[in-house]
Length: 136
Length: 136
DNA sequence: TCCTACGATGGACTTCGTCCAAGTCAAGAA
DNA sequence: TTCTTGACTTGGACGAAGTCCATCGTAGGA
Ligand SMILES: [Mn+2]
Ligand SMILES: [Mn+2]
Ligand SMILES: [Zn+2]
Ligand SMILES: [Zn+2]
Image 1 (tube, each protein chain N blue to C red):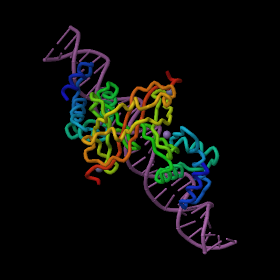
Image 2 (cartoon, each protein chain N blue to C red):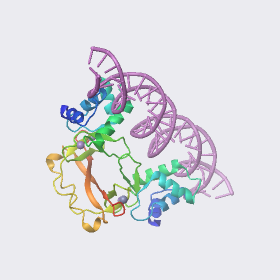
Image 3 (tube, each protein chain N blue to C red):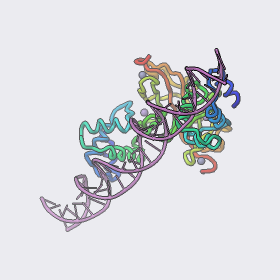
Image 4 (spheres, rainbow over the protein chains, first blue to last red):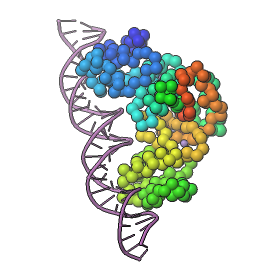
């Protein structure tokens, strides 16, 4: 994740301990944390970090394209640091576990012209739902 | 939508004016209203209907499979009465307009076996994002 | 080392949604 | 038709997720 810190510095960010710790929490594969989970883990390293700062930092990372927001049905948004590799999600209906997946094919191309209603289609988000081995 | 009312009666529902009016509001194509929009429109016909009843009724319709919940990124859930025809969604990033679309191809089949992590995959939800003609 | 604009803080506030005790009424029984 | 009763509705309190803002603190350049 020092890659991320380097990129942020390059973008003119002040490197504060709060931003560093949020970036460290958002490291690894298949990471899809809620803002509250990010705050809890960040607070384990830097006890006085505020919720507002976590929200601010996550919002900035999303705006920079360094982190993705993953939509949920009625639950808190999840933040995904794997923004450099295009991917989709497989979600367990039982325990909520989220895995990164890479379907083959061209999902955008699968949308016929007459079904586009004049829209300029820019991206597609796919969520596979199923039951994981542990929940089966 | 009297079809829906008939099915609900068949399932043993008491047919109250509140439930009738919610069912009437959820009629038509490309309908993807928030709970609050349903409440506003229902209240235009039945002024004293409460928010709690709208939420209760929507939750019951979802549980019966008569209405779908459409996930959003950080905004209020949308309720979709088109639950009888499998379809996906095209969303305008500008104004939030939602259209029903029917992509060709087999999205579930596009997920390779080695990307399923042992899950039993049951369904797939696809959201196309773009800019509508009005917002362009 | 000093300055200052950018960032952090916490608490008020908003939005979306759930829960509950009390009152109401749809629909079957008689 | 009237009676009865449990299912339904109501408004308001409550809760979770997220935003906003005035004020304070500090990273990093001069
Ligand atoms: Mn991911
Ligand atoms: Mn739809
Ligand atoms: Zn599971
Ligand atoms: Zn639009």
